[in-house]
Length: 296
Ligand code: GPP
Ligand code: MG
Picture 1 (cartoon, rainbow, N blue to C red):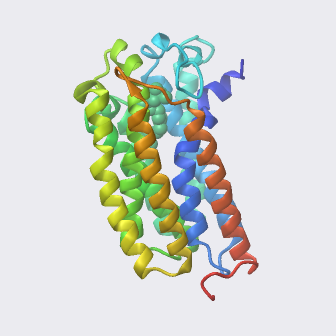
Picture 2 (picture 1 turned 60 degrees about the vertical axis):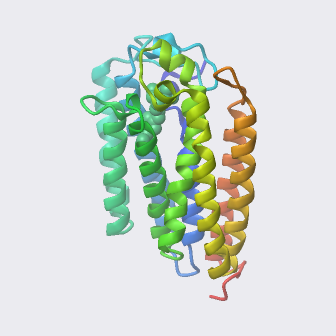
Picture 3 (picture 1 turned 60 degrees about the horizontal axis):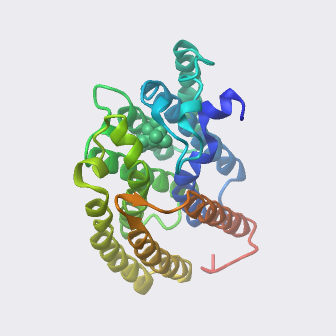
């Protein structure tokens, strides 16, 4: 089993937010960007994720023991607060260190990035912790994740500053909500057993998955406008978004059988990791002037 700190921080689970962040960074970079800012941005991102996941483990201490290991980055029954390998007090100290580190590294980048990291740290907190605990409120869970994914995308863009266009940003929010929905459905069985009223528990897995259709239609409209009006870089990006989202929505809806979503977590984790690597790699090529799609 992994070290107790890896089980506390759950870096594999960060991949879901690494995607919007990396794509934002990749699209935002220009040949004038600063490599150090890009490095600090990824450190700030990691600190935000560490803070949010520690807070989540503390808040979920008593429900994670019901988890059976299905459809997750790990069996949550092994999270170190549940197994008493780490005390709540130590976890709180650690979370504070990561919180202030996220502020510190974000502050080194630019004021907008700093403000956005403050907000996503706040979202991470109100998502997990009482009295708000939006993760256990229908719609509240989807809205928090949509906000976190969309805002971290803007933060990524702001590192280099290119492509900060309202429609591109709106598309990122809609896309995050679409991709969050299957994850709340795979958690359905465990959340229900733990007494958490998530969107999937409240509306039923079938109904909440069907909400992916109108959201996908909206995203396709947004992406088509971006495709028709954007530069070559945005055209390629919009094209990939359209194909990937339509396919994902269809495949996910076809794989629901009696309230159970038969999709292995690797169907999210592997493509998300690959897309993140390609996006950052592309940004680095732009930074060094090795790939010029927009004629900088
Ligand atoms: C875990 O939530 C997810 C996070 C802590 C990510 C941070 C969320 C933000 C909105 C910033 P969960 O308790 O629903 O899932 P798990 O069952 O994996 O703990
Ligand atoms: Mg949790």
